[in-house]
Amino acid sequence: MIYRLFTIISLYILHSFSTVLFASENHHANAEKEHTHTDIKSEIKADIQHHLQDSYDFHLFSDKTTGKHYGFPLPVILWDGGLHIFLSSAFHHGENVVQSGGNYYKLYHNKIYKTDASGTLNFDEHHHPTNDKPLDFSITKNVFMILLISLIILLMFKSMAKSYQKNGVLPRGVGRFLEPIILYVRNEIAIPNIGEKHYKRYMPYLLTVFFFIWIVNLFGLTPLGVNITNNIAVTFCLAILTFLITTFTAKKYYWQHIFWMPGVPAPMKVVLAPIELLGIFIKPFSLMIRLYANITAGHIVLMSLIGMMFVFQNWIGSSLSFLLAFVLSILELLVAALQAYIFTMLSALYFGSAVEEHHHDSHH
Amino acid sequence: MEIIPKIVGAGLVVIGAGIGIGKIGGSAMEAIARQPEATGKIQTAMLIAAALIEGIGFAALFAV
Image 1 (tube, chains in turn blue, brown):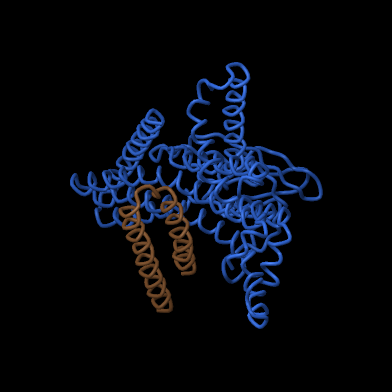
Image 2 (cartoon, rainbow over the protein chains, first blue to last red; image 1 turned 135 degrees about the vertical axis):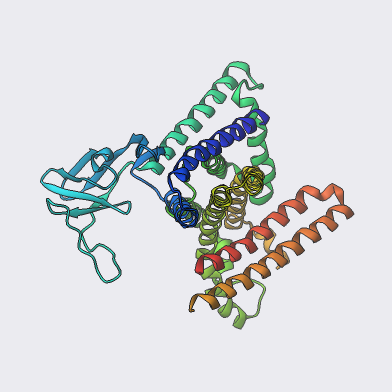
């Protein structure tokens, strides 16, 4: 744990310094101070906006003086009356029109539009392009990182399973670190909330979701600039999974509780039914929003604090905001684990209510 | 001009959420001080309640 912490912290420091270097070079290029201020502010804003979005290429950093971007392209997969596959480097960051199988595509504000050969975009009164959008199955940065992280998790647990096979009860290597966490999820999250009788059915999902969210959040704190749980589509899918599992494994008493609450007078039952029915959908919705908003807010605050270094442009202010950003990123390490814990915990709570037996209801 | 009432409203919600989470934390502290052996259970309940309130706070922030 401590080793991992140090790795992340040192990566973070490296990241901050590389940003300082590149930005200060850019700063010297502008002579007029007032002008620089507004420039840097809008630049920071654009940088944060860019960071919060998914993208078609894996962009690591760019050199402002030479205008070069460092990173690697990812495949773009479109379905538009046929399959179109090409590398995102063909877009040249939105400058080029890509011709694929007789159709033309252009990247505009991180979205792919179908255009004519010269790349004309038509805009409506709100300055949104009215061009058709093809069905997009691209391996974007987020998809790429999800696949990579899934692979990491798979390898981690595969090696753990193998060491159990070989050594019996004592795990080796990464398993020694993972075993207490798995036991924690089982003993503190699954069993108290779901109950001894049914918890085993839900353990695979709970463990997967816990480790997935945790590792994804930790990757979000590295200077790679990935932020998967910042994407509401990802948290939406996780919440939908919890919703589906709750709904399809629910027993009789769960539905009875929703539509005909036992132990309350009949008029109240009629009032309670729609509220409870709404609650089914509010629960996963709050799961989705909580994870998404926590991580997004953390990233915005962290990046703004790093940006403050360039706004202050003096030793005291900049080092103070660096210190603040440093402390906050340690807090973010806690938040990364805490959000994984809360998501798993609340999922377990909902599963617990779905499989609740009759004798638990007697106190209502 | 239209944005100002929205921001004030979101601020009020955040103040409310802050007071709520503060109260939960304070009560949990007192409860742990009274019954240190129940620390684990109290922490779990505290985190769940705090997470539920936090959700409302974020919903208000994102509604702006």
